[in-house]
Image 1 (tube, rainbow, N blue to C red):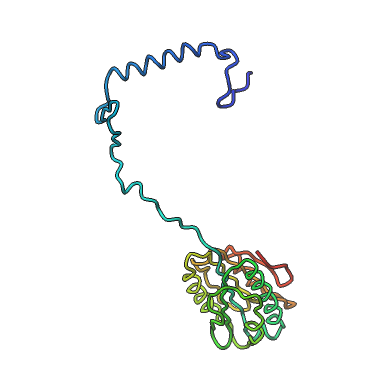
Image 2 (image 1 turned 90 degrees about the horizontal axis):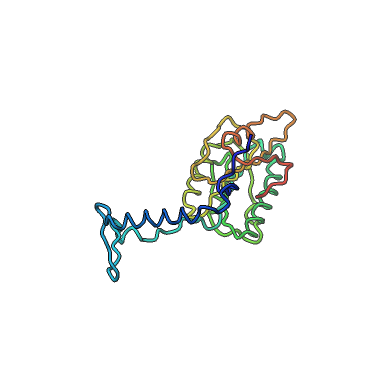
Length: 226
């Protein structure tokens, strides 16, 4: 059985012969169309006449502004609850946070920082360009109390909504020790969860939240970055 020819392959039996006949047929067909005159509804043109394009108006040619995103806004949401403090996870999370802010500085991205715990949700750093060193922001952060995760994520959604053309990244640093499982904010172009549940009996709630969000996921022992 002869295998089928791929699209556009030459016919070896034709090998260019008969092309003159095909060309002559095409010319004859064009001549017949010209002889019949313009098609109904079209405008005939002659040498020197301006070209008329039916249905094309000036507004059709207006250039649409580009919607390209300029840079990134990283909104870091830090769990400062009692469980994070008691396990030592808050200290580790602050170290990871400093490294991520340093990476944002190298990329010339913007950052924002939300902390949540017994004192509710606090916007510690409003959206701004990442500084060369963020220790003055991170070192004073303390913790304790409950884990108002729903409110923290809702506040982060508002921060990212005001990203003004920047790509919104949501970073959640938590041990996940709460029953609250908020949805992923629509304003988060990219979501990332860093899991600090290092207890002997882990609950895997942060991991399940990352799966629910279809987010990037790391544990505290992984190398975190983008």
